[in-house]
Image: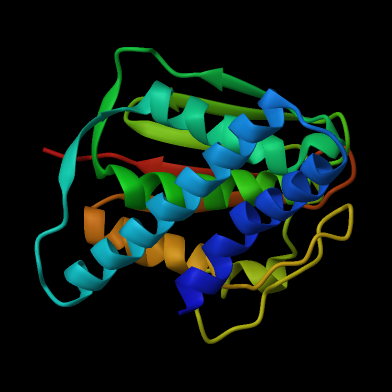
Length: 212
């Protein structure tokens, strides 16, 4: 239920926004965005079923997935949610790179959580860099950073580390603990680097794919 509450909130908000606009004007591009949001919800529901299976010791659906394509798709969907911030995402991932993951879980619970955090805590017009080098995926923002007092508990469900974004966006505090558990199940290492020093602020999330 925590996963559902967290991950369904964004696509449902997008759908509500465009439905309200469609009441005033008919636009094919808006209908396409609605369809994309609906597909996103269905993917998340499928991910939750998959998560339930591997928590009950069933096999998860791990396959070799093109990382550039998956990140590009995720960025496009997150951009729709945070369009008012006009944030530019720079993707530096070799188009031939593949990683072994459960596609739905990795996209909806891992990548989108990292991107959502980067967007929430970045200022309007900032850049976000997503790169891959030496089996490590890095999502780096230029945002306000994370206080040291919160870093130690940021992946724990029992601790309240939720903060509002730079435009007042609300959080649940469930996102990163969900990411940690998903990465553990898929054999992916996770680390975080952050700074709150003026002129050097920002956060980097790192995923290590030392997979066979």
